[in-house]
Length: 241
Length: 254
Image 1 (spheres, rainbow over the protein chains, first blue to last red):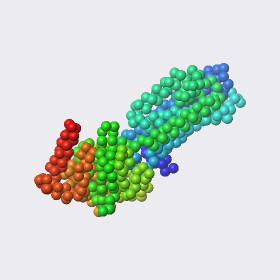
Image 2: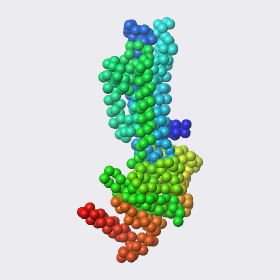
Image 3: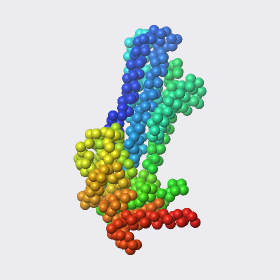
Image 4: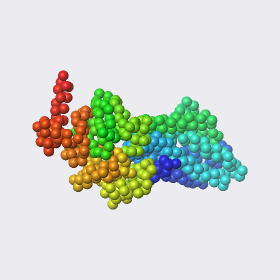
């Protein structure tokens, strides 16, 4: 708790904690406006109303979340490198690997806040704008958890990259390159490509059903664990030379 | 003799380059130890090893009988340090920067204003660290090292970037620390004239090797016996370095 409180003090004026909730607000606003404008067109698609609600709006929401994760990860570690603050941490009775864990927790909470905001908007749309009796709250909650879990590998990977690379531009570049690979290969359907965290994150957006896939969930949890563990171990080994 | 920091044949090798070569230091408790040497002599590398920032390639060292890496936290709890350039959070004010360190060290809230006062930064405590001048950043780094009045201070060229008045002020402060706070100071510099005014003991390093270690008076006596003016240690220091460089060149030829 002490490290978490310290981290919240450190990020002051960087905006790194606000990025994800703001992205959530933006995603929620997008969903509301889009559904208000395109309601009839969306509901005439040959899909169940819940699938329309969850898959047809998720593409843009996912992109907003993806870029927010990339930016937040860059910002939250950039403050350690700018002014070489991390060098001082190595000289203090402080566990530097814990820093990675704390930042991971903060970004995960930010992502959860974003997803809650976006899904609250989707829930409101479902209750007020879908045909009578077609809205199913458990399906919405299930999809929210699915989109949260499938976003975690990108979050862990980007935080790992940001913790190792001092130049923020390079980390941003990795994020953009990852996004492009996800866009290019995400629709191929090849299961082996699920090894790419960006493809895992894009998966719910390219699927035509809101039903979570066990394989994708497993890949997501595995990749998030591997990237987070790698980040923790790497931070443990790195001293300041 | 009670030593607070000792190193035994401490070495650091980077591929083919020996940055520190079998250095054995003996730093007395409550003394100021001046670590002297030209740029690239290995002073910062030695200090980094003492702080656990880089592992030694050979040799050992002990701080209050404790060793890295097993006693890392216990060692760092008793050391205030300032290595090379100041480290700070650019997005935070001077006071907020010290507040972060204070929380890590579990110190009372008054420690921050105490450290700011000590380095003469109280007036600028609310300014963002990124807007500080080089001298102010240097003072902030020093304040971070002095926070909580640690029993050991490791300061690597702490007066870099300060104006003459600032150098004098910080020098006076460092000089007074062993008596005021009962602490031991290891301070590096490439200027003997500076170390001469502060240190009790002195270690001269060149190309990673320790050329001299002892009291300042002993260095003066050595200077006199070698025909140098005892009051002009700078000439003696430069001659010592030049002699060592000549020996190295000779060895390289062979």
